[in-house]
Image 1 (cartoon, rainbow, N blue to C red):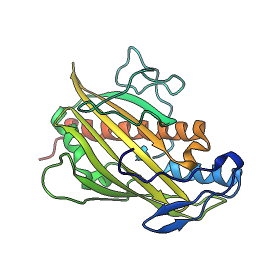
Image 2: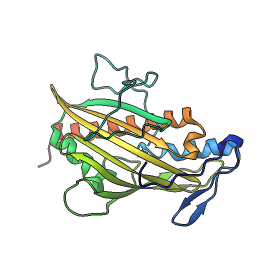
Image 3: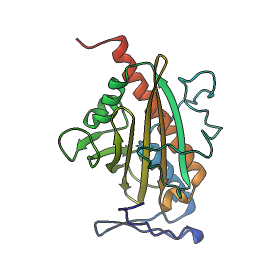
Image 4: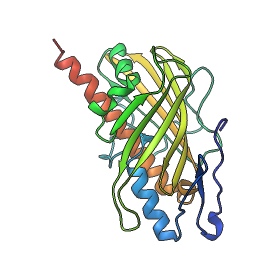
Length: 255
């Protein structure tokens, strides 16, 4: 992905991997078990979502896709195989091995959903995994807008409690239609380069919100099935939170 330094990857012999950021070297995972535990603990805090998935939280199993469009895609089936969401012609990282796409229908006005999604400094008010979120620019949310957000990583047998810092930059945006942002998520012993695309489509009774995200990096690529599962759970948690927040304001309008 343009603008990101690639992470040194030597997972074939399970040697420790170096993570570099601003001249600082973070410790790598030294054993397969420790590496897997570290990946799992870190990614449960992200979907860059949440992590947003970047990457989130442990998700309740989603309902099957099909006649119930308000439910997210069933986790056992890849959503829309062979296709990719785009925003102004740009999509996720085509070479990333960790990816997931899902969607839901939110029964709320498009303008309200868009406001919740783009008012990033208020994310902590409706997304519990987001501790802090700060815009790095001023004015309307637009192409080039940047924001930094943090999410905690709970302790596990291999690592102490720590945090993940995610710096995202909006690369493409079409108001009330789509968003695409990119950015690194960095924590102790972990770096994920993520690309996240959102589409918003008005349908009968609400808005279909579709999202797709890819993750790249030595740690997530060392255990692609686990990383993909956790990314899926994070994205589906984000959609549930967005749906709950938007629909709550419909049923209980602010005075």
